[in-house]
Every structure is written in C-alpha cells, then in structure tokens.
Length: 155
Image 1 (spheres, one colour):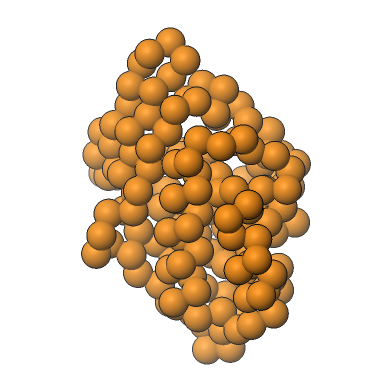
Image 2 (cartoon, helix red, strand yellow; image 1 turned 135 degrees about the vertical axis):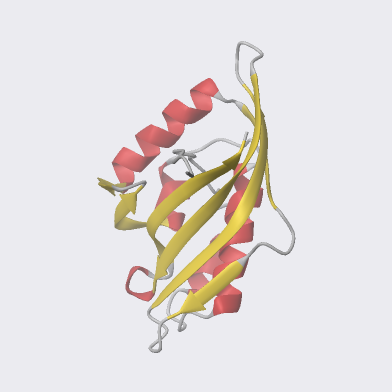
C-alpha cells in the first residue's frame, strides 16, 4: 500500500517569470509541462525566499492542493510554515521518471516525476526520501498549477 505524503514544493518566479509570461497564452504541450515540473522542483531546492509573487506565478487562483481546495494565499501560508520547519531543502527529479500527457485541446496537462529529497530541519533533523510528484497545469490559468499531489515512494 502506498502511503500518501503531503510534500510541499515551491517554485520561485524570479528565474522563470519571463518564460511563464511568454508561454501563458500558448497551448499546453507535454514538453512545456515537463519543463515546468523540473523548473518548479529546481527552484524550490534553491532555498530562496518564498513570497506572494512566487506563489502567484506558479499557482492558479484556486487549486486542489493535496486533496483540498485552496486559494493562493492558503498555499503561501502552507509553504511558509513548511520552510520554517525545513529551511534547508535539496530536491531533484530522478532522470527518466518524468511523464506528461495533455488533453486533445491542450487545455490541461498532467505531469509527474519521482522527486528525491534531502532536507534538514532547524533542529538538525534530516529527512531523505522519494515521492511521485504530480501537477495538473491549466491553460485557463495561464499554464499554472491547478492541482498538486504526491505519493510517497520511499523514506
């Protein structure tokens, strides 16, 4: 039985905001979805500050976030709480594990990959593991995340 794990991941818009604005009106493609997933994980691992702008760039107005409907503001609060516990984070997508599929109209894409992590808490506790991260991107929201979930693979 696979246990569910609520892994929060944040991406920072600083390095990707130009790419987002150029691609926001374009039809979604599997290649774009894969780039967004990998960029999302890479920037989350950068351990930079998280703010409203970074959440606004990556999330739709309303998101199904680990099974719960949430606003961007609620997601931002969750992200800030998470990094207060885990300030040092190193995440990466395991090569060869990314898959993506879009609907026929290219209005929604599902992208997932195995994400490996190594993180350290403020108290020095460490956590190492893997989870399958899944994002649903919506063209209606400018290619932003409309749904985020993850399932634990190993710890």
